[in-house]
Image (cartoon, rainbow over all chains, first blue to last red; front, side, top):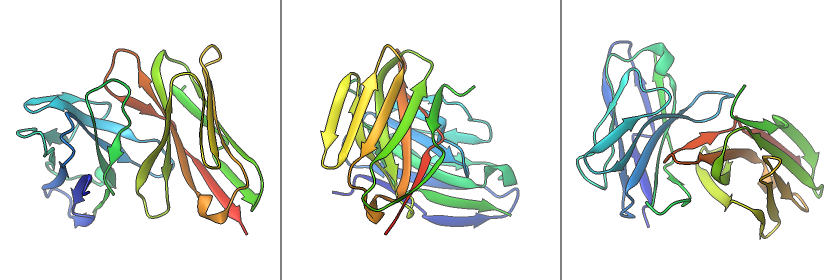
Length: 113
Length: 109
């Protein structure tokens, strides 16, 4: 069971570069989420999606973009990377039934230098 | 003020001690979640509850809806319980969670 797979696990970017964090799930979950976790802080929601073709902003969407062309994949795009985007990024998914637990990927540790 | 507050932020105890981590929230919720994050970083769901109490092995989670408070208890704590424990609430009418800042638990042998 792969569950939620995130790639890459680690990445160092220079200021102004762009990259895409990949997230894929094989559980046929409708709902998918991107979070960032800064040291000593709770997880903050960046973007989420309730199904293919539907995305919505979370608490901290600035500097990021997402797309959801398939049920399985939910990539997160960073344009013009900034030091403030240094963080650990988690992708999660869950079934559409109400009050289902979220399943998390292992995270991507991103440093912007 | 955060919508979800956990206490304590850090907790160090000796092996075998009874552990309690608290979570208070200020919004209407559909459910409350307890999550565990090990030093390697992965996050797993421990409990999801909307009333009463749930037990899994040495872990017990309780919730008091009227007081907007939940507790996570660990009995006979062990060094392998060392992790960050995160409380999160599902907001009524929304499809997303709001997270507490986490409680870092260290159990010494």
